[in-house]
Amino acid sequence: MTKQFMQELISFMQQKGFIWGPTPEIYGGLAGFYTYAPLGKMLKNNIENVVRDVFFKNDFLEVECPTIMPKIVWEASGHLGGFTDAMITCKKCKSSFKAEQLLQELFPDKKITSFESFLSKNNVKCPSCQTIFDSKVEQHNLMMKTVVGIGNEAYNRPETATTTYLEFLRYYDFFRKKLPFGVFQIGNAYRNEISPRQHLLRTREFTQAEAQLFIFKDQKNNFPKFDNVQKDKLTFWAWELQSKNKKPETISLEDAMKRKFLKNKVYAYMIWLTHKIFLEIGIPEEKIRLTQHSPDEKAFYADDAWDVEVNLNSFGWTEICGVHDRTDYDLKQHAKFSKTNMEVLDEQTNEKKIPHILEIAFGTGRLTFAVLDLNYDKKSEEEGKTILKLSPKLTPFKVAVYPLLKKPELTALAEKIFTDLNAEFLCKYDEKGSIGKRYLRASEEGTPYVVTVDFDSLEKKDVTIRDRDTENQVRVKISDLKETLKALIYNKQTFVMLNKKL
Ligand SMILES: [Zn+2]
Image 1 (tube, protein in one colour):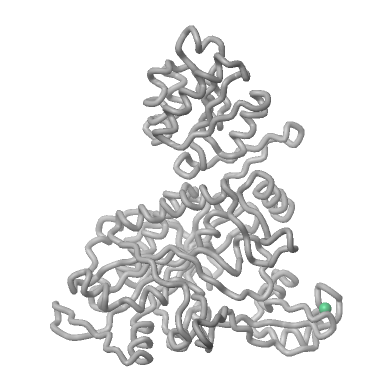
Image 2: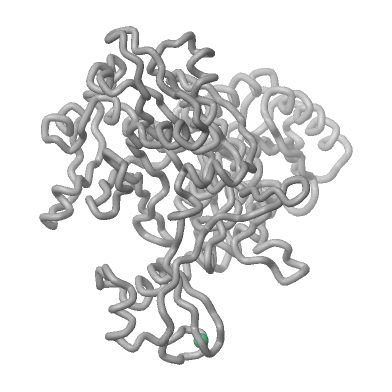
């Protein structure tokens, strides 16, 4: 798989109405900007709603902050100074490349620590015009600048997190001065990437989902929620294992603590919560691993940092999410730059202090790409048959309703059934084209069940339900149809079980 698979997947997304772009296509497209077409937008919404649901059920509340903030905020956060990528520009053809990505593509087996010395020693050529690079590596800032009002310099946020931190004192009051508490945002962010070329995995405008837990330092190992989840097993690739060329290990959170892979209970819980989201989205456990950052990779203020990686068919193991212990760094910085006291009372110790922040951060576009990548199943070239094996929770439509033929008696009954079912869950009615073609379309869109009204339906008052994955059909009384579909869609019953029972 890989490159060919990726091209197929991207053209599938374009043709079937999941992702269009780079946008605006009629003007040639601007790299790193994509449109979520109707089915893609429905899928992304469903994914974001699963994310919301997991956060809500674990006591995080949602906020929405502005996407534009004044310059001083980004000076305080460090983004204006240090949020950069190393860039190489070809002197001859003027193409610019992100150094890390370019060298990784050209020399996949090498671990390059200094781009500049590597370039000068290895006569690396520009992929566009084959001239040997002789320019210096420059630092390219990823912030997108804008102007607010008359000449006030401001920036589009490169993540939601900073905008979340700024309301800390408000949360403290809202949560009745009791820590720990959690909030999250799902919203757009912008990064001026040098040359984004990995479809939804790296875009210049994207939706971030980020959760923050605010907690006093001495509460980090006194965190009762950990006790409920400590037996759950996850796959850890701790730095200790990576540095000794050892494989990831699947062990319980409790054991990960004992082996010192994880530093404290609250961090272990945040790792668990992140993993839970990925499972709820329907990503198979064996395709998920947690990879710890090396000490050099980690930001200087971070206490610990792990990535959630997913094994994609197109790109292999790919970072989809980060979990970071940011300590008290951010609130201290904003306290300093805003000249606002961010210390709050810790009732346990009766001291005033600045809490720590633990953070989960990922792009929901990346997650959408991962879901499409892992569920795209091209059955056969000749038949042009493709199944998108999405969980019913995520599919744009839950049920398609078809009359076998476009005959008035069949369409009348099918429309009636459609109206009834559509009140319960989102359905799609289609009467155009052969029934075979319509089944194929439903499978491509991921629709798990198709209800077909045929001539027997008129007399016997029953219809068929066709299962997307097995392609089997069962006949069900129209009077039982809604309850049967509810049981299937909300995972109370499997199609195989239903098939046996009938
Ligand atoms: Zn060139």
